[in-house]
Image 1 (cartoon, rainbow, N blue to C red):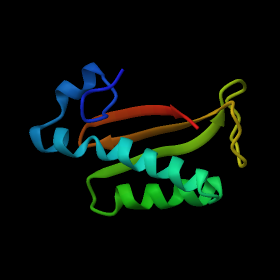
Image 2: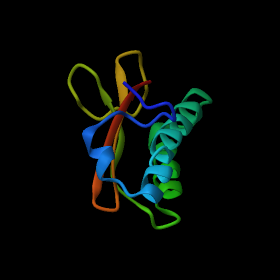
Image 3: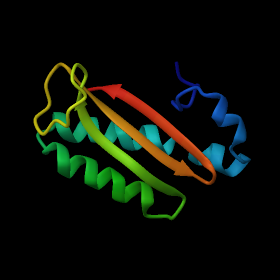
Image 4: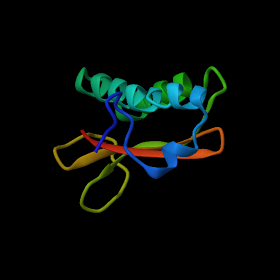
Length: 103
């Protein structure tokens, strides 16, 4: 379940400052860019790396992980398939945001 701006719903969101809450949807936007890049033919590692760098560029986010894994075995995936998901965790201030979306 998501907020109107795309942020994954969580009780943690209430601990975000007003400024952090405005920045928080950037995690979902970065994840959507990963999906678009993968679907456009970019390899998984490069797509994740670009989004990671984008998120950390302004110093607001500290990415913990941004990776594609098998939905069944949770192993890292280099080549996307119908049974994988993009997983992300990033710190925004003192709040750890987590999210995942189907590839």
